[in-house]
Image (cartoon, rainbow, N blue to C red; front, side):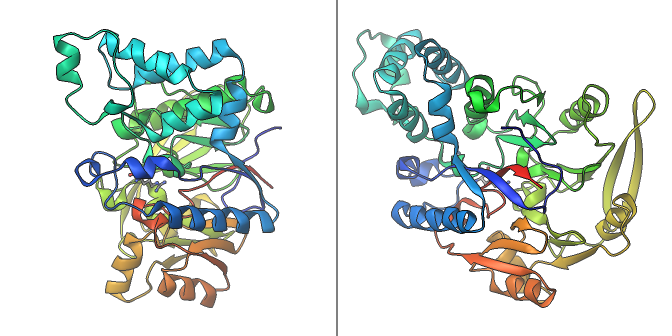
Length: 400
Ligand SMILES: NC(=[NH2+])NCCC[C@H](N)C(=O)O
């Protein structure tokens, strides 16, 4: 199977998801901020909503894969499984040797699927007794978890990004999510289905980048948000890699400087592509933006600073005078803010002009329809509580 992502809107053929599970039941109010949630979704409903989303994808001809299944296949050999657990624990906050040894033993006592589920849902302090204890273990264990859950895993958009025929394995900005990238790193390395997939960025790099900031506009142009989660150094490194060390067709990156705040989190929180010439964006984004246009020069990157509306910049660099930006929530300021908050701008295109959107954002969805977009709605009362929409919940592997 080869990766093929040269567009945000072309026919979606294969996609990566994670069905939310017990990790949501290990969230409690005191942990919410650290775990990047504002509220606790009700698991049973969240799963029903997620299954509906997956089914809509399937009925539209998209092959759905679950990251935990791909990982289980990758970890089928004991040695690889052990190596994964070691690397996973290295990325966690646990430093105490006795606790590390005990955790390793505990995790490896499960079969592979069970172990992966455990890693995702988190390990509570009361799950097992330490064989060796000392003063520091006592202090360290004065909390609820050895390993915190990964409640954000259902936002498969962020830990990696498939770009062209390769993969960007992200160094994630927050501690809460950093461990997530390891899943697909192991899949690409050890799951035969992904053999030969080139790696364009690795999570061991120092600078952060997250998939929600990476949009593949055409086979030439990428848009990457410089945001709360993605640093300019990471964009620069990726640009050099793509332009000069691969045979990819990309020659332009629009590095869009967006406010470094939670409401703007990733570029795709405020801006998604819905058709060959139509985008949906946060209503406040339209005016003037600073965009660094990174071009493939002869031997080095060439950077031009553009200060104009996003519409003008897209028209110019995508070479399409017809490009139009629709506003999330339309002209109604309150609706714009409400629907933006519930990821009204974060839709997933499955074909040019066909998108999957949360049903709750009805003002935006109506506006999309008035502009000729076919909107397929999915239920959203629980999934939306994690502040991510259909695009955040999915990672395309093949479009075309
Ligand atoms: N691509 C996205 N917009 N992802 C949204 C992720 C939301 C998640 N709770 C976080 O804070 O990381």
